[in-house]
Length: 163
Image: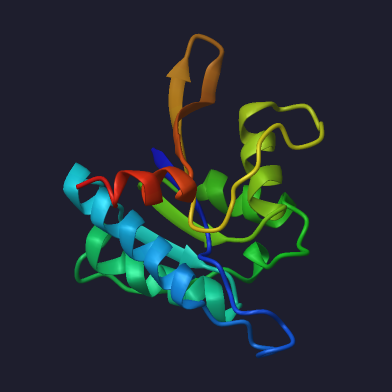
């Protein structure tokens, strides 16, 4: 199982709009990421997002690139202040490749708990519009998660969307 964790794109400040939709920069970040994932042929069988507008909008931009014809699914356990426990339980039940669009620090906590079974502080962080790629693999000890890649939005800007 491949698991892609995506931090929503940059959002407008709370003072400007309490709903905090994606800013122009956030739309561009997600569009660059979608372009690169499409070019690489990344496909998932599920795309989930938090209840926040910026997360849903980010997922909507990514949907045609990674899950053509698919539908978005709301996971309230991906909201910014949620503890990772509920999301971890939901992920562990999944059998298909999945892309989650959420928030920091929740995504870093989820990734750290998958990679390191002990409860420790997050060992990584995702800036808005960045992606982390994990894979659940069978090992001699059972199933384990491996970190296969990370794309920071800053790198995608430099590369011009990978194309």
